[in-house]
Length: 80
Image 1 (cartoon, one colour):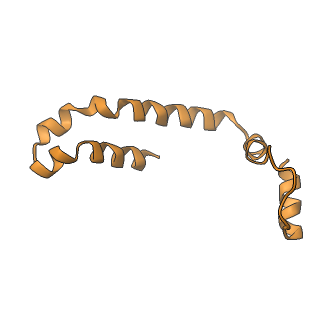
Image 2 (image 1 turned 180 degrees about the vertical axis):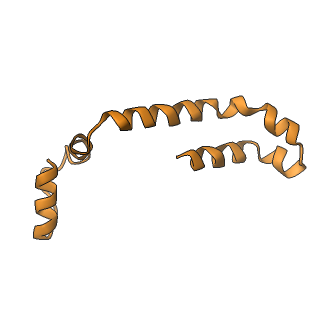
């Protein structure tokens, strides 16, 4: 996720990178602030949920599951 934030900032500051204006590149860090806050919130929320809770969120709307192997069926039932 941190790599995504770095790539986002590089894309936003593409003009400063191409022209070699490194001071301008460094001075506009606040444009990446919303993405950084989102990164922090995602990490905090991810740490609050257990693996079982995450699986329940993912599979909450599954009423009729596509045909699965017996091993996969057992795995899903264990998680839920």
